[in-house]
Image: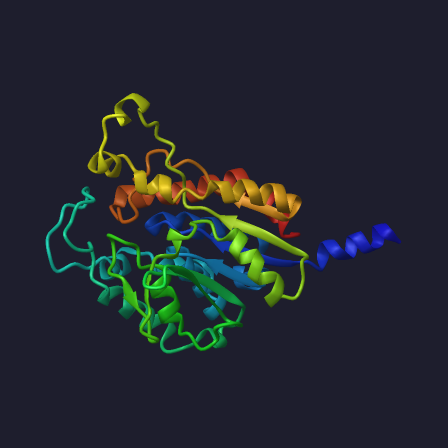
Length: 307
Protein backbone atom coordinates (compact mmCIF):
# COMPACT_ATOMS: atom_id res chain seq x y z
CA UNK A 1 0.00 0.00 0.00
CA UNK A 2 2.88 2.39 0.82
CA UNK A 3 4.38 1.80 -2.63
CA UNK A 4 1.00 2.47 -4.20
CA UNK A 5 0.75 5.88 -2.53
CA UNK A 6 4.34 6.66 -3.53
CA UNK A 7 3.35 5.89 -7.11
CA UNK A 8 0.34 8.22 -6.88
CA UNK A 9 2.48 10.99 -5.37
CA UNK A 10 4.95 10.74 -8.23
CA UNK A 11 2.25 11.42 -10.80
CA UNK A 12 0.16 13.90 -8.78
CA UNK A 13 2.86 16.47 -8.21
CA UNK A 14 2.69 20.00 -9.60
CA UNK A 15 5.37 21.20 -11.98
CA UNK A 16 6.78 24.71 -12.15
CA UNK A 17 9.32 26.14 -14.57
CA UNK A 18 11.75 28.93 -13.64
CA UNK A 19 13.55 31.17 -16.16
CA UNK A 20 16.77 33.01 -15.30
CA UNK A 21 17.43 36.46 -16.73
CA UNK A 22 20.17 36.95 -19.27
CA UNK A 23 19.04 39.08 -22.21
CA UNK A 24 19.49 37.46 -25.61
CA UNK A 25 21.22 34.51 -23.94
CA UNK A 26 17.81 33.34 -22.69
CA UNK A 27 17.06 32.29 -26.27
CA UNK A 28 18.94 29.09 -25.42
CA UNK A 29 16.20 28.10 -22.98
CA UNK A 30 13.54 28.55 -25.69
CA UNK A 31 15.55 26.42 -28.12
CA UNK A 32 15.70 23.75 -25.41
CA UNK A 33 11.93 23.97 -24.85
CA UNK A 34 11.25 23.66 -28.59
CA UNK A 35 13.00 20.29 -28.44
CA UNK A 36 11.00 19.37 -25.33
CA UNK A 37 7.74 20.07 -27.16
CA UNK A 38 8.87 18.09 -30.21
CA UNK A 39 9.95 15.05 -28.18
CA UNK A 40 7.07 15.03 -25.67
CA UNK A 41 4.31 15.89 -28.13
CA UNK A 42 2.95 18.43 -25.65
CA UNK A 43 3.16 22.21 -25.36
CA UNK A 44 5.24 23.66 -22.55
CA UNK A 45 2.14 25.60 -21.47
CA UNK A 46 0.33 22.30 -20.89
CA UNK A 47 3.20 20.51 -19.13
CA UNK A 48 3.78 23.02 -16.33
CA UNK A 49 1.38 24.37 -13.71
CA UNK A 50 3.13 27.67 -12.97
CA UNK A 51 5.61 29.93 -14.77
CA UNK A 52 8.24 32.02 -12.97
CA UNK A 53 10.94 34.31 -14.33
CA UNK A 54 13.02 37.42 -13.90
CA UNK A 55 14.26 40.00 -16.39
CA UNK A 56 14.20 38.49 -19.91
CA UNK A 57 13.10 35.27 -18.25
CA UNK A 58 9.98 37.08 -16.97
CA UNK A 59 9.01 37.78 -20.57
CA UNK A 60 9.49 34.15 -21.59
CA UNK A 61 7.53 32.89 -18.58
CA UNK A 62 4.69 35.32 -19.27
CA UNK A 63 4.35 34.22 -22.91
CA UNK A 64 3.77 30.63 -21.81
CA UNK A 65 1.55 31.47 -18.81
CA UNK A 66 -0.64 34.12 -20.40
CA UNK A 67 -0.89 33.11 -24.03
CA UNK A 68 -0.21 29.40 -23.87
CA UNK A 69 2.16 30.03 -26.76
CA UNK A 70 4.25 27.29 -28.29
CA UNK A 71 8.01 27.52 -27.77
CA UNK A 72 8.33 28.26 -31.49
CA UNK A 73 6.05 31.29 -31.16
CA UNK A 74 7.95 32.55 -28.11
CA UNK A 75 11.19 32.23 -30.05
CA UNK A 76 9.70 34.35 -32.84
CA UNK A 77 9.74 37.29 -30.42
CA UNK A 78 13.52 36.94 -30.27
CA UNK A 79 14.10 37.37 -34.01
CA UNK A 80 16.16 40.28 -35.36
CA UNK A 81 13.10 42.36 -36.24
CA UNK A 82 11.91 42.33 -32.62
CA UNK A 83 15.40 42.70 -31.18
CA UNK A 84 15.96 45.78 -33.34
CA UNK A 85 12.74 47.24 -31.94
CA UNK A 86 13.68 46.44 -28.34
CA UNK A 87 17.25 47.67 -28.62
CA UNK A 88 16.39 51.01 -30.11
CA UNK A 89 18.51 54.05 -29.35
CA UNK A 90 18.43 57.65 -30.54
CA UNK A 91 22.12 58.25 -29.87
CA UNK A 92 25.45 56.64 -30.75
CA UNK A 93 27.31 54.45 -28.29
CA UNK A 94 29.98 51.77 -28.38
CA UNK A 95 28.28 48.40 -27.85
CA UNK A 96 31.48 46.94 -26.42
CA UNK A 97 31.66 49.56 -23.67
CA UNK A 98 29.87 49.69 -20.33
CA UNK A 99 30.52 53.41 -19.98
CA UNK A 100 27.73 55.72 -21.11
CA UNK A 101 26.21 58.81 -19.57
CA UNK A 102 22.72 57.36 -20.07
CA UNK A 103 21.05 53.96 -20.63
CA UNK A 104 21.98 52.22 -23.87
CA UNK A 105 18.40 51.90 -25.08
CA UNK A 106 15.12 53.76 -25.00
CA UNK A 107 12.08 52.09 -23.45
CA UNK A 108 9.61 52.81 -26.26
CA UNK A 109 10.37 49.81 -28.49
CA UNK A 110 10.29 47.36 -25.60
CA UNK A 111 6.98 48.77 -24.33
CA UNK A 112 5.45 48.71 -27.81
CA UNK A 113 6.28 45.02 -28.10
CA UNK A 114 4.72 44.28 -24.71
CA UNK A 115 1.61 46.21 -25.79
CA UNK A 116 1.43 44.15 -28.97
CA UNK A 117 1.63 40.81 -27.15
CA UNK A 118 -0.14 41.41 -23.83
CA UNK A 119 -2.25 44.49 -24.59
CA UNK A 120 -3.89 45.73 -21.36
CA UNK A 121 -4.35 42.29 -19.82
CA UNK A 122 -3.67 41.93 -16.11
CA UNK A 123 -2.06 39.03 -14.27
CA UNK A 124 -5.55 37.96 -13.21
CA UNK A 125 -6.19 37.02 -16.85
CA UNK A 126 -3.26 34.63 -17.10
CA UNK A 127 -4.18 31.12 -18.28
CA UNK A 128 -1.70 29.63 -15.79
CA UNK A 129 -0.25 31.13 -12.58
CA UNK A 130 2.62 33.52 -13.32
CA UNK A 131 5.22 35.25 -11.15
CA UNK A 132 8.06 37.69 -11.69
CA UNK A 133 9.80 40.27 -9.52
CA UNK A 134 11.66 43.58 -9.65
CA UNK A 135 13.57 45.88 -7.31
CA UNK A 136 11.84 49.00 -5.96
CA UNK A 137 14.62 51.59 -5.86
CA UNK A 138 12.80 54.22 -3.77
CA UNK A 139 11.76 51.75 -1.06
CA UNK A 140 14.97 49.74 -1.44
CA UNK A 141 13.08 46.46 -1.43
CA UNK A 142 12.00 43.63 -3.69
CA UNK A 143 8.56 43.64 -5.33
CA UNK A 144 6.90 40.37 -6.35
CA UNK A 145 4.13 40.31 -8.95
CA UNK A 146 1.95 37.25 -9.38
CA UNK A 147 -1.46 36.32 -10.74
CA UNK A 148 -2.96 35.60 -7.28
CA UNK A 149 -1.53 38.20 -4.89
CA UNK A 150 -1.24 41.13 -7.31
CA UNK A 151 -3.90 40.25 -9.92
CA UNK A 152 -4.55 43.84 -11.06
CA UNK A 153 -0.98 44.51 -12.19
CA UNK A 154 -0.77 44.47 -15.98
CA UNK A 155 1.57 42.06 -17.73
CA UNK A 156 3.17 45.08 -19.39
CA UNK A 157 3.94 46.69 -16.03
CA UNK A 158 5.23 43.50 -14.41
CA UNK A 159 7.53 42.51 -17.29
CA UNK A 160 8.78 46.04 -18.01
CA UNK A 161 9.67 46.45 -14.33
CA UNK A 162 11.35 43.04 -14.06
CA UNK A 163 13.45 43.64 -17.18
CA UNK A 164 14.56 47.25 -16.65
CA UNK A 165 18.24 46.29 -16.53
CA UNK A 166 20.43 49.12 -15.19
CA UNK A 167 22.75 50.59 -17.83
CA UNK A 168 20.74 48.90 -20.58
CA UNK A 169 17.25 50.39 -20.03
CA UNK A 170 15.87 53.33 -18.04
CA UNK A 171 14.33 52.78 -14.62
CA UNK A 172 10.66 51.88 -15.12
CA UNK A 173 7.80 53.76 -13.47
CA UNK A 174 4.76 51.57 -12.90
CA UNK A 175 1.15 52.72 -12.96
CA UNK A 176 1.20 53.09 -9.15
CA UNK A 177 4.13 55.55 -9.59
CA UNK A 178 6.73 53.22 -8.04
CA UNK A 179 10.15 53.08 -9.73
CA UNK A 180 11.55 49.65 -10.57
CA UNK A 181 14.71 48.08 -11.93
CA UNK A 182 15.54 44.57 -13.08
CA UNK A 183 14.61 41.68 -10.80
CA UNK A 184 18.00 40.05 -11.33
CA UNK A 185 19.34 42.61 -8.85
CA UNK A 186 17.60 40.43 -6.24
CA UNK A 187 18.59 37.10 -7.75
CA UNK A 188 19.01 35.92 -11.31
CA UNK A 189 17.84 32.40 -10.40
CA UNK A 190 14.15 32.61 -9.37
CA UNK A 191 13.86 29.02 -8.11
CA UNK A 192 13.67 29.70 -4.37
CA UNK A 193 11.34 32.69 -4.72
CA UNK A 194 9.24 30.68 -7.15
CA UNK A 195 8.89 27.72 -4.82
CA UNK A 196 8.08 29.92 -1.83
CA UNK A 197 5.11 31.44 -3.65
CA UNK A 198 4.04 28.46 -5.76
CA UNK A 199 3.45 26.16 -2.79
CA UNK A 200 0.83 28.66 -1.57
CA UNK A 201 -0.64 29.41 -4.99
CA UNK A 202 -0.79 25.74 -6.03
CA UNK A 203 -1.70 24.66 -2.49
CA UNK A 204 0.83 21.87 -2.25
CA UNK A 205 4.44 21.20 -1.26
CA UNK A 206 4.63 18.37 -3.79
CA UNK A 207 6.29 20.40 -6.53
CA UNK A 208 8.86 19.57 -9.20
CA UNK A 209 10.99 22.44 -10.47
CA UNK A 210 12.64 22.75 -13.87
CA UNK A 211 15.13 25.63 -13.72
CA UNK A 212 16.54 27.12 -16.93
CA UNK A 213 19.73 29.18 -16.88
CA UNK A 214 21.27 31.47 -19.49
CA UNK A 215 24.89 30.36 -19.43
CA UNK A 216 27.67 31.10 -16.96
CA UNK A 217 30.76 33.21 -17.58
CA UNK A 218 33.58 30.93 -16.45
CA UNK A 219 36.46 32.86 -18.02
CA UNK A 220 39.38 32.99 -15.62
CA UNK A 221 40.15 36.29 -13.92
CA UNK A 222 43.74 37.01 -13.00
CA UNK A 223 44.02 37.35 -9.25
CA UNK A 224 47.36 39.13 -9.55
CA UNK A 225 46.10 41.69 -12.07
CA UNK A 226 42.92 42.29 -10.07
CA UNK A 227 44.93 43.71 -7.15
CA UNK A 228 45.56 46.82 -9.28
CA UNK A 229 41.95 47.43 -10.43
CA UNK A 230 39.74 50.30 -9.36
CA UNK A 231 36.11 50.73 -10.41
CA UNK A 232 36.83 50.86 -14.13
CA UNK A 233 39.02 47.76 -14.04
CA UNK A 234 36.41 45.73 -12.21
CA UNK A 235 33.65 46.87 -14.58
CA UNK A 236 35.75 45.83 -17.55
CA UNK A 237 36.30 42.42 -16.00
CA UNK A 238 32.68 41.50 -15.31
CA UNK A 239 32.16 42.58 -11.72
CA UNK A 240 28.45 42.93 -12.60
CA UNK A 241 28.39 39.30 -13.72
CA UNK A 242 29.98 38.26 -10.44
CA UNK A 243 27.52 40.28 -8.38
CA UNK A 244 24.59 38.74 -10.28
CA UNK A 245 25.92 35.18 -10.07
CA UNK A 246 23.14 33.17 -8.43
CA UNK A 247 24.62 29.68 -8.59
CA UNK A 248 24.53 29.50 -4.79
CA UNK A 249 20.74 29.31 -5.25
CA UNK A 250 21.28 26.32 -7.51
CA UNK A 251 23.41 24.58 -4.88
CA UNK A 252 20.82 25.25 -2.17
CA UNK A 253 18.00 24.06 -4.44
CA UNK A 254 19.86 20.85 -5.28
CA UNK A 255 20.34 20.15 -1.60
CA UNK A 256 16.83 21.12 -0.56
CA UNK A 257 14.67 19.72 -3.39
CA UNK A 258 16.90 16.75 -4.38
CA UNK A 259 15.04 14.67 -7.00
CA UNK A 260 12.31 17.29 -7.42
CA UNK A 261 14.73 19.80 -8.95
CA UNK A 262 16.48 19.85 -12.32
CA UNK A 263 18.78 22.65 -13.42
CA UNK A 264 19.66 23.23 -17.08
CA UNK A 265 22.74 25.42 -17.60
CA UNK A 266 26.35 25.42 -18.81
CA UNK A 267 29.39 27.68 -19.23
CA UNK A 268 29.02 30.33 -21.94
CA UNK A 269 32.09 29.20 -23.84
CA UNK A 270 32.53 31.55 -26.81
CA UNK A 271 29.17 33.32 -26.33
CA UNK A 272 29.47 37.03 -25.56
CA UNK A 273 28.82 37.68 -21.86
CA UNK A 274 27.00 40.93 -22.67
CA UNK A 275 23.22 40.66 -22.64
CA UNK A 276 22.57 42.48 -25.92
CA UNK A 277 24.92 41.02 -28.56
CA UNK A 278 22.41 40.24 -31.31
CA UNK A 279 24.98 39.66 -34.03
CA UNK A 280 24.21 36.68 -36.25
CA UNK A 281 27.35 34.94 -35.02
CA UNK A 282 26.47 35.31 -31.35
CA UNK A 283 22.82 34.34 -31.83
CA UNK A 284 23.93 31.18 -33.63
CA UNK A 285 26.22 30.30 -30.70
CA UNK A 286 23.32 30.81 -28.29
CA UNK A 287 21.11 28.55 -30.43
CA UNK A 288 23.79 25.86 -30.38
CA UNK A 289 24.07 26.14 -26.59
CA UNK A 290 20.35 25.38 -26.36
CA UNK A 291 20.78 22.37 -28.64
CA UNK A 292 23.74 21.19 -26.55
CA UNK A 293 21.57 21.44 -23.46
CA UNK A 294 19.03 19.13 -25.07
CA UNK A 295 21.75 16.64 -26.00
CA UNK A 296 22.97 16.64 -22.39
CA UNK A 297 19.73 17.00 -20.44
CA UNK A 298 16.94 16.05 -22.85
CA UNK A 299 16.41 12.44 -21.80
CA UNK A 300 16.70 13.36 -18.13
CA UNK A 301 14.15 16.16 -18.60
CA UNK A 302 11.62 13.85 -20.25
CA UNK A 303 11.91 11.47 -17.30
CA UNK A 304 11.73 14.37 -14.87
CA UNK A 305 8.37 15.52 -16.24
CA UNK A 306 7.14 11.91 -16.42
CA UNK A 307 7.22 11.45 -20.20
